Figure 1 (cartoon, one colour):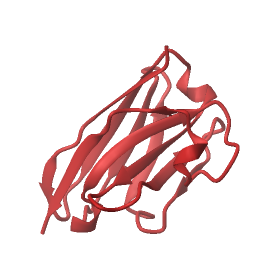
Figure 2: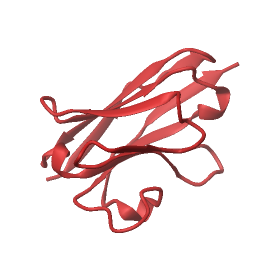
Figure 3: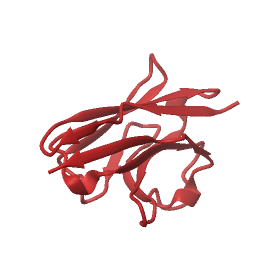
Figure 4: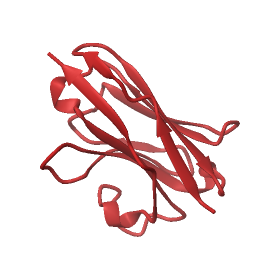
Length: 124
């Protein structure tokens, strides 16, 4: 049974850093495409960062240079290092996974598996 469990969300001031983790079980994370999405109240879920099986990463323009997606294969965990956080980064952050990428990485419909989310709140 595939399961994704996020952790690491918190309330921080602008300019600080957070690291989110997504513990995967029921599959080998390095064999799947995985991504982080976020959703703020009243807004659509948006893709933040993507990582494929070869370790190639892609980022939304809004987080380039500040966020880094990576994978700890030993722990079967997806990570998101978030630096220089801004109030506009406030959202629920979700981890997602799929065996293959059949469509754009930014589309939520491209992923069959999702975690429950972890809240990130950034105050000015």
